[in-house]
Amino acid sequence: MIPIVFFSKELRSLSVPQLIDALHRMRCDGIDLCVREGYPINPDNVKSELPQAARRFREAGLKIPMISVATDLTDPHLPVVDRLLGACHDAGVALLKPGYWRFVEGDYWHQVDQVRRSLEVWQQKATAQGVRIAWHTHSGYNLGLNAAAMMHLVRGFNPAHIGVYLDTTHLLLHGEPLPMAIDMVRPHLCVIGVKDVLRVRQPDRPGAFAATPIGEGMVDFPGLVRAMRQRDLAVPLTLHTEYRVGSEEERIAQAGRDVAYLRQLLGAQS
Image (cartoon, rainbow, N blue to C red; front, side, top):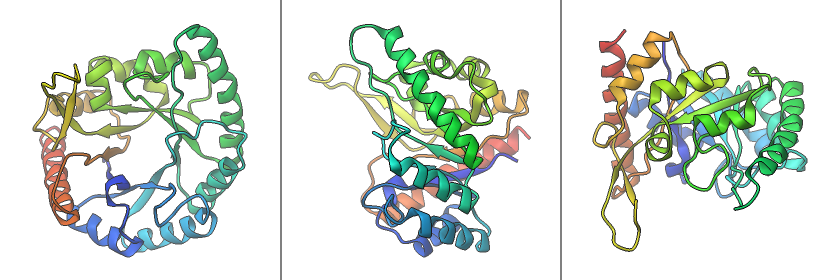
C-alpha cells in the first residue's frame, strides 16, 4: 500500500487534536509534520511534544512517518539537530526533511564537496538515532534541485540514512521526467512530494507559476503512479496544498478532493 500523508505547512494554527480531525476528514493515512518556529510542535518543545503527538496519532489510526524542519537548517553541528533527531527516535518517526543549500555563483564542485562533508556528519548522527534524512529536490538556485544534481550530493552515502525526497512540481520546473528521476535516485528514494502547478504569464516574472489542486496542473500523476507500480515502490506520498483558498476549511475540503483523486489513480493501477 502507498500511504498518503498531509504536509501540515498550510495548517499551522491547528492543534494536534484539530489536525487529527482534519486528516480523518481528508482520508489521509498520516501527516508530514512541520516542526518549525510558530507551529504547535517546534524546535523548543519537540523532545516532549513529538513523542506525545505520535502516540495520539497512533491512537487515532494515523502515522507520523516524517517531520519537516526549518528550510535553512543544513548545519548538522547545531544543537537543534541532535534535539530533532533524538525526538524522532523517541517518537518512532522515520524521516526528517532538513533545509536547502543555496548555490552561490562560482565553483559548483567545490560547493558539492562542502555539502558532502556536511552529509558525513548528518549520516553519522542519523545512524546513531535510527533516522533517515530526506533531502528534497527543490527547483531554483539550490544544490540538489533535481535528481541528477541530488545524486552529486548523496551518491556513495548509506541509503538507509541519507535519502532523497523527490518533488513532482519542482521536477516539472527544473528536473527530469518522473520515471527517469525515480530510476536515478531509486536506492535513496524515501518519499515523494505530490503537488501540481501551472505556468502563468507575468511580464515582470518570466517563468512564474501557480500552485493548483492535484490533477488540475501540468504534473503527470497517472504516469507517476504507473512508474511506482512498475517498480514496486511504496514510499509515502506527501500532499502539499500551497494553492490559494479562502479559509482553512476550504483547504481541508480541497485536500480531501486531492486525496480522493490520488486514491482513484492508485486503485485503478493496483
